[in-house]
Length: 113
Image (cartoon, rainbow, N blue to C red; front, side, top):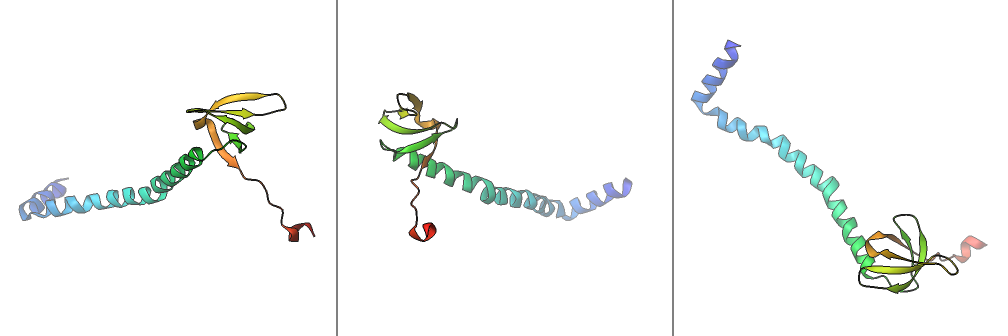
């Protein structure tokens, strides 16, 4: 214990503590940079894509809500859309509740042969 205190006192007298202080933060800075590129950047990209999809919705588009309801857009309002989910069934959901837009499957002639 005494030797540790003497080492700290000697390094303080030499001015080495200031240099070690900056170097001790380097691993934390590197962790933050790695987390930024691995977690935050992809999340922002997905969020921008989702926002773009919500802005380009049109009537007759088939969508899936976050609750799993599949429907066709009948009417678009400011903050909500009316979905046709069955023969005589329509529901109104918030735009933010739409998870994805279903893309019509195009059958390739080579697959059907």
